[in-house]
Image (cartoon, rainbow, N blue to C red; front, side, top):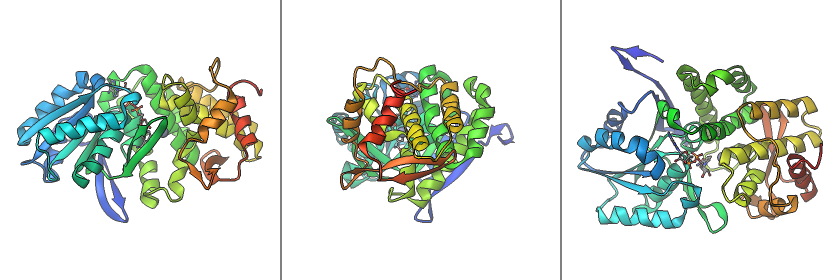
Length: 375
Ligand SMILES: NC(=O)c1ccc[n+]([C@@H]2O[C@H](COP(=O)([O-])OP(=O)(O)OC[C@H]3O[C@@H](n4cnc5c(N)ncnc54)[C@H](O)[C@@H]3O)[C@@H](O)[C@H]2O)c1
Ligand SMILES: [Zn+2]
């Protein structure tokens, strides 16, 4: 972290889209520089709508609104009920209505203040309202700061299908106040570690080693440690989405742990958090990688050890659904191509690949492994 005349400079990462600089990710210790960063982008005379949900509202809406109100002609807020079950087209419809009632037009901007649910939903509304208005990500959860706010994937759940309706739509800015993690409940913090650990497993073993050696400092939320961990996670995600912005190849590696994870998330009625389900999905996929002769038993144990070290689940006990139910639910996922599931396996720790060659029996074994039927 650099200091100039008492002002914390933070860290900046630029994300390009088709080789042209597209938006910056700002890592900051507070919200103070948000108005300045928005002014640099030319915002000022227009309207802004801060979109957030009922939990984040209580902690941060007033502060962000009072910082932004002086610089906009109008600064409104739209607050929806917290939780994944509200990441749907009904909430988007209510947001459209709020924007229409307040005469928002294409020069205006939406500001997503919250976790991945808020970012995904706001981004989707921004992509579709008047065929597209600007949006800015202000992620407040660990998952959103290390993963979901970067890369322009926006969307909502529809009927029983997760992220079924969406758009690739880039934010104009990602501004993260890392200090907001202090108010994140412990279980949510732990859930957020799953995606950053995933970045190490699929791309960069040196990052995994950094996480392993800084576990205590991360759990106690040492600021410098968290800044470095989040920064490195953003770099890994940035590099992947720059090379493959629309998931035609490499970006699908980021779905490691998500095929089985999403099925568990759905069948748990979202009582298990996204990162917890991704953790279980990664253990399953790790076991299948072992069965295919890619990783060793020691590497699988190491993968599990890192996840459980952050309080993430590595077994699914007393789950009221069978392995067959979980398998059937994976088929509802959109990661299918010509009826075949696209599945991410590990070649080794730090290197993943995509396969369409898995049989149902392979997936079932992976699911049975986390459910304790295979030891
Ligand atoms: N777009 C992408 O590329 C991408 C990638 C990964 C995940 N996702 C999506 O992200 C969502 C999960 O994100 P999430 O875990 O952030 O969920 P979330 O937005 O529901 O946030 C988790 C919980 O933490 C609370 N919270 C957030 N910030 C807080 C803070 N600073 N202090 C106190 N409480 C706070 C929220 O109110 C909520 O209860 C899922 O819908 C998933 O599909 C999207
Ligand atoms: Zn995810």
